[in-house]
Length: 475
Image 1 (tube, one colour):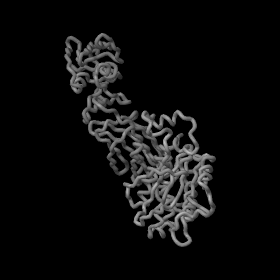
Image 2 (tube, one colour; image 1 turned 135 degrees about the horizontal axis):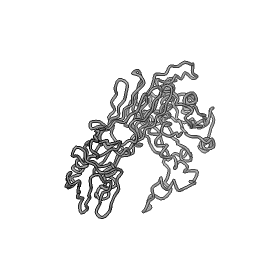
Image 3 (spheres, one colour; image 1 turned 180 degrees about the horizontal axis):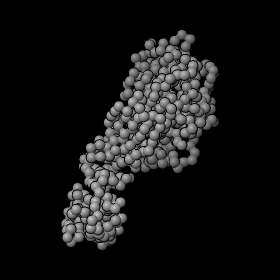
Image 4 (cartoon, one colour; image 1 turned 45 degrees about the vertical axis):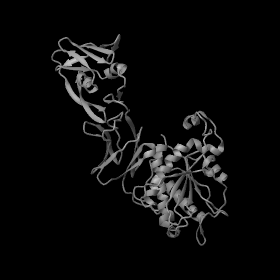
């Protein structure tokens, strides 16, 4: 380094090692970032010898030798020479190398490679990998949904401040390609990733203190959903006595691009379904709820909503599936009422199709199902759902979570179920079947015919669909 050139100590390098988080200072010299070499070698427990007066550093890695020379951008690795982005320098008796030294030199000879974060400022020493995440935000006039997609499972501590929510990751090796996501809407002022010696966290700052927030974990998808809401006011009268609950509003309609949703009111005509009470059958209740749901979805989600039946008519399973496939629909929901033999069972559940795999499961060398599906252009119509099982399961998990919250008394241990349902197996779209409550449960018989409860069912479904849309729909 030329005489008189000063080093500016800037933000730190973050080092993850043995479930601990350590730091090394970044050094900026003439707009070039440098890594303190000796301190890094000590973290790695690598033998070295150095002499500032001689202008050299020698490093031993097993049987390999690394030689560095002051003011040279060439490093000798055994018999090979490796070029660096900047010359090796000495500042205040401290050896400094450009950060590419880690990947270009050390990772050539280390038995266990150092994992480098996307920013180039985070290093993971030892087994494992970074848990990388992406952030997507969807804005609406009364609700903003922040989708945090992780690459692996991680436990997050949610901390709520006066006008912000912080997702703290502890010492988990987390990597983000951005520090500031440059995002702002009517409800959210900023989304920033903070990585320091004491905290690794994502901070969402709200526009004002009056906003409400809710964090939902979708564990099977490694996703956290943060909803920021403003209480909505009903300014117009709504048919069928439906009043949207606070925070349930439409997502910006210009975002694209669901076009069509099919809602199936279970049973109909001579197929009356479960007897709920005198002159009231499952087919009657499912049609009422389907119509309520259609109205709310049309006024909030902003896509075409079709009912498989709008009157008390008989429809075969094939006719229902054909209507959805022909549209074509982006989503299919079939509404039913549960009818369990045990009257004490009164919970609501979501069902996903259990479709036979493409090959016999006893095959000795089984190819991954997703890889098989990707390579096959056509599947038999009766197993069309195979290509959509992942998205159907995502939808089911979100729906089950919302129903646990509003319909199942907060019992969050309940999970969605798989069943070999013929109706769902032939649908070429995300598709689920809902069973609401239990027609055999005495208290439920009156509850299911209460318009306010039916409204609650419809709004629960709408809330879940808005969350799913944030994940499923693409620009």
